[in-house]
Each structure stands twice: as C-alpha cells, then as structure tokens.
Image 1 (tube, rainbow, N blue to C red):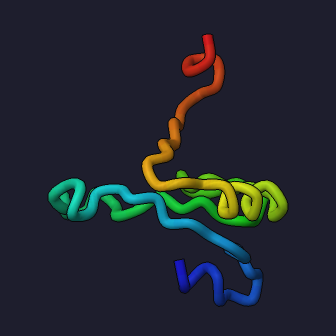
Image 2: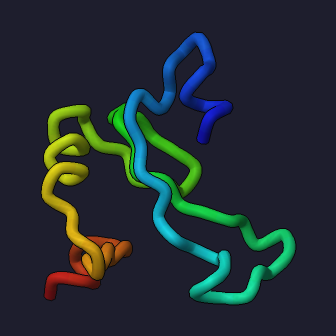
Length: 79
C-alpha cells in the first residue's frame, strides 16, 4: 500500500487494509495475494475497493471491530 500511496499519481490518498490471507485468521497461501485494500481514489483497481475520499473517511470513522465487508456483484448479493 505504501508503494501506491507514495507514487506521484497519489493512487491511495487514504486507505484501510482488510485482513485477508494472513495470520492470525488464516495460514498464508503463497502467491495468493496478501490483502485487499480500501482506498480513496475512485478509479478502477486490481481487486481493491475504491471510494471517493469523503465516503472512505466516513467508513474509517464509523467502522467497528467485528464489522464485515461483503464483496460481490450487487444483483447477486442483494436479490
């Protein structure tokens, strides 16, 4: 995440690391990636969650331990 946050294009202005494929919740699976990021930059990404800055900051201020993020195609999740 640091790499993208410090690029001249400022791809990640704010961000949250979502626990994924890493201890203590799961054993590491090599070459399976290590995290999904939520970040402030409303542009297409390689599997991360991109938000406009105000929405991301609102999430960061209101998220609580135990919150869950459900990812998928909207019409398949909310039918």
